[in-house]
Image (cartoon, rainbow over all chains, first blue to last red):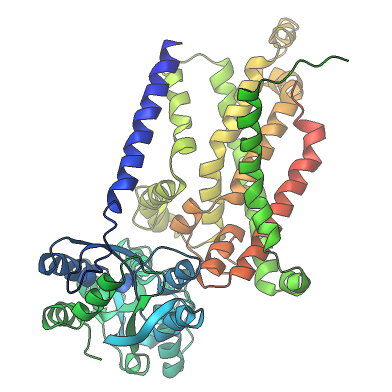
Length: 262
Length: 262
């Protein structure tokens, strides 16, 4: 009986802790409608390849607009589009390709025109020192080179397919990952020898991987569009964040990460 | 016949619990595209994923039986130092989030893992991204279910039969095969069904350890996830429905024979 009571008390504590965690995020319901002021939480759904730069930009934005908190959900753009169309609470969507953004726009869930804020292109991420000597896409067809690609529904997978077709080679991957970071992780772990990822992802992981540039990546350049969402709880915040992404401060962060100007 | 009134404090939560369990299934059925269902079922990738799922979960169950029954017997019949600790350790995969199990498997059996690098160097065997890797991931997650079920059955079995066999000159091995096994067969079968169902539904450890490639490592749950992520909700519903039907059919088929409570 005593143990039962201890367990029950422990469970109650856990639940209380969990609920407190949930509540903390969105208690401030001020949507910032007052003229000129932006405040409250802003939820941004962004492509996995934006993880590092948007995290930095989010902090800068919070510093520039006291009273705001920017929360990110980073995942494959296709997954994010599905989540938004199924009613996930988001204010802004930044996709790694216009195709996945169009899914949200076509479903009538966007607000206003999408704008393209950066471009990105693919590189081959290989283990430090390039032990398999991969020099280009043709190197990925060697039987002893294990390759991870993104699934075709994800922008990096669509770009990889376009680049591979442009090169006229046949690459058989061992796995199709759900976002670019998962593909990169397989290289970092040493489970695959190469993965097609964005130049920016390889740069962010430069301590663990080397990037091999290849000419066909110019045939598969991804535009990154950003748009405010119709069901935004913080419409003013969404507009302010989108405007900030094109500001000189944010552009500097994005350029340093390896993104190209649109 | 007089039935005692069911107290409301028990009836109400019981009813809510039932609705809670059944409502999501109703949601699945309500969104099922019945008209396009036959065409969807015949899609090669659906057939492929289902075949792979049935194959791997069956192989995983066989592996679990081969390893799990002797393990359960050791725990139930042999007293050795640290037995309680071993029993506790066996239940760890049961409470471990499967994705953590997948990472642990990578670090143990991956190409750079503890035992994996030796497997690769000595035999040229790498498990990630192979169907064998899927079986390993499923077995890791499902084995504790079998061990716990069989150990329970062994403890509940009347050990006098085994003692009688021993007094009649039977060796411990003969006793095990001719007395113990037939005695606890229903318990083993129940454990195997649980184990199989758990393996069939395995997702986290599989996608982390074995990756995701159609026909090789993409089992039904992975196919459901990827279909959903790529925005094809209808396709995901169809795949989910198949999994639901297969699991319910197998459980119902075995229930009367094996799963009746003593």
